Image (cartoon, rainbow, N blue to C red; front, side, top):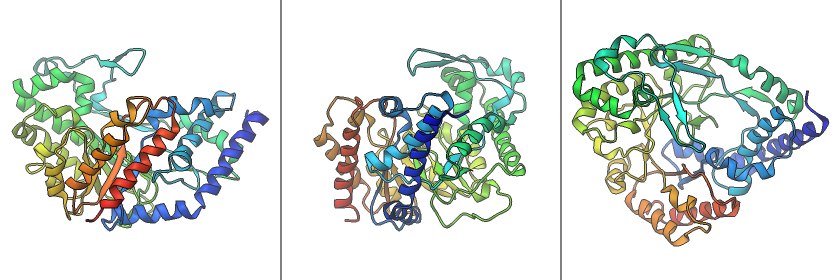
Length: 409
C-alpha cells in the first residue's frame, strides 16, 4: 500500500508531467517530429539517451521510500529530466506509459551470462560447434508476462490515475538476429560457423527469421501490438510520430507499425558474406514492418549499396561514430531517409568539463557531410557526466547552435 508521503510525492510529479504535457512547447515538439519524420523538417532534432545516465543523475533527486513507489518515481523523473533540464527535443506524454511485457526465446534456449560488478558481461556459449550442436536448435518460444506488471499498474493508478492516466503504449517491433546468435554462440563461434558451415548457418538464420515472423503474428493475434504513430519510442533513441501508419484499428499487424533492426555483431564480416549469409534473412523480417529504422553502432557504409539501401520501407538509418559520414551524406541526400547521427559519446561522457570546441567541430563535420539530408542527433552510450546536469544541457545548446545555423544550406 502506498504511504501518504510517497503518494503525495508521486501525485506532485504526475501533476507536473500533466501540466508540462499541455504546454505549447510540448505541442510544438510533436508537430516538429511529425514534420521531421515526413522528411519535411525545418531543423535537426536533438535527443539525449537518459537511461544510461540515470544512476548518475536521478538518485539524488528521488524522495520516495517504498520500493514500488521509487520505481514509479524513477520513471516519472526519467521522462521529465530531458524536457525540463536538458531541454532537448524529447516529448512528454499526457499519460504514464506501460508496455506489454513480451519476449521471444530464440530456439527455446535461455541466454546464460556471467557478469562483472560493472557493465561488463560474457555470454556462455551453448552452441559451440554448429555441425555437432545443430540439433539443439528447437522452435523458438513466445511469451507474454503482463502479470508481472499488475501490481505496478494498480499502484500507479491508485496513486495518481485521476491526474495522469495510466495506459499501455506501443513501441517499435525489434529484431536483431545476429545479436541473438551471439548471445547463444559467442562471437567467435558465430564467425567460425559462417566459414565452416555456411549452409547450416543459412538454415539457422532461416529458422530464426521465420520464428520472429511467427512471434510477431503471436503478438498481433493477442492484441499485443499497439500503434506507433505518436510519441511511442522507436529503437535507438527516437520517436514514432508520423501520419503514414494507422492509429484506429481493432487489431494491429507488423505492417501497421515501426520496426527496428541492427547487426552490430557482423562488423568484421565481409560485404560479400553479409550479402549472402545475413541480409536475405534481415530483408525477410524487415518486409513485415510498416516503416523501418535500421542500425546501431555498426558502420552501415560498407554494406549500404549492396544491402541496406534495398530495404523498401527504410525511413531512418543510424550513422554511428564508426560510419563514413560523407559517404552516407551523399547517399541519403534528398532520399527520404533520415540521417540518424549518433555523435561520439566520449565528447559528453569523458572529462569533468565539456570540451565545447571539440563538440562544435564534431557537429559541424556532420552538418557539412550531410548537406541535403534531414538530420537527427541522438546522443547515446554515455554512462556518466560527473553528476553535472548543466553539462548535458550545454551539450544540447551547442548541438542546436551548430546544426541549426548551417541546416539546409
